[in-house]
Length: 304
Image (cartoon, rainbow, N blue to C red; front, side, top):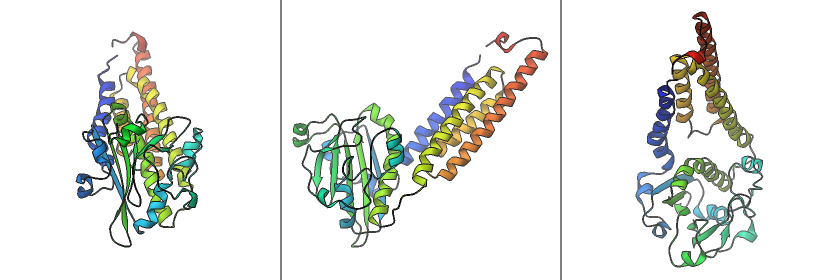
């Protein structure tokens, strides 16, 4: 079997994702000034392998946003992201709808801020500037290491006032590990929802929404459709169907292009496109087998 089309089918979307999508999501919402500024916690990782800076405007004073930051964490105020998705994997995360008075206290360096106890240790507080910044270190960082001014990585939540009515919520990650670099796009999906969840709560417009269930569900549907399509396209490839390979490439490319957009409606469009291309691939495979049968040989007899 000729493997070149399949190598292209995987390499093209991966290259597009790395060159076009990742730069976009690693700077989502941030202005050029915010990307270049030195933020609290940057000095803890002076030579990072990569930096992600995301930001969003909150139409409330900085003092109204900070309570949501200081109570961040599992078993505290929650993570303000896709609770349904996190609880589907038994993470037991529940996000508060109001600031919790008992949690409005300063945090000490080294104190634990838990994300998901079942799957990962806690992130220790690396720096705490009341009303301004909460900087978390890596799960492997020790309190002594953090008190000495060093961290393996940082995840900083910063409230930056614009005026007396608005502020910017800036989230910056600095890391040098390869694993964290690969994890970045997945973390962005949850982090983006977290930032919007904080914004909506601070602005007083948050309410439980069906979209918080439908959006993650649409990802699973799209992934399932892609898996079915891939299997059928592979069978079509054995029948040497260029149309099937192109259909698969187009479907994967569209899915990659829309990765950064979280709207369930667009996900539905992608899922539909995958289903259509899957059907085309299935038909192409059947047609190829019929041609082989008419020529008196089976697909297994064909040269690779």
